[in-house]
Length: 206
Image (tube, rainbow, N blue to C red; front, side, top):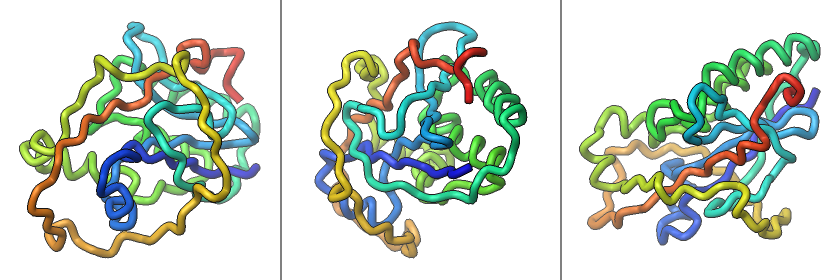
C-alpha cells in the first residue's frame, strides 16, 4: 500500500520562511497518508480522548501552507495489523497531551511511519522541537506560543493547492551554529487543532 507524508509550513507569513525551509529550520505540521486517508495529530481539551484524526489528504488547515509530499516505503501489513497499530497510537497520543516541543504532530507522524513502513521521518521536520528541548531559553526568546487562539478545522476555509505550490526539497547541510541572524523576530505559532468530528474511533480507523 502506498504511503507518504504531507508537509505543511506553519511559517508561511514569516519573512524568512523560504530561508528556514531551505535550511531545514522551519516549523512544520505533518500528516501520514495511507490508502487515500491522512492521519494527523492535534490538540483539544477533551479529557482521555485521542488527538489523532483522519481526513482526506491535504485537508484545509488555517495558517498552514502545503509544501511537499515525501514518499515512504509501501506498507506491507494487513488491515488487521494496521488497525491494531492505529488504535494503539490513538491511545498514546491524546488531545490533552499535545506539546509543541515534546509530543507534537511530527512525533506522531514519525511513530506511525515507523510502525507501518519501518521508516523514520526526515530529521528536519522536527528539528526545532529538538533544539527547543536542548536550549529552552533560546526557544522562549524566539517563539511565543498562543494555544488560546489555535484554530479549529470547523472554522477553516480551504485554499486552492496546486502542483505549483511544491518546492524542491533541499536537504539541510548547515549546522545551527553556522547560522547567524542579527535580529530574529518573534513568531506567534498556533498549531492546528483537531475537528473532534474526525477523531479516530473504533468505526473510523483504516
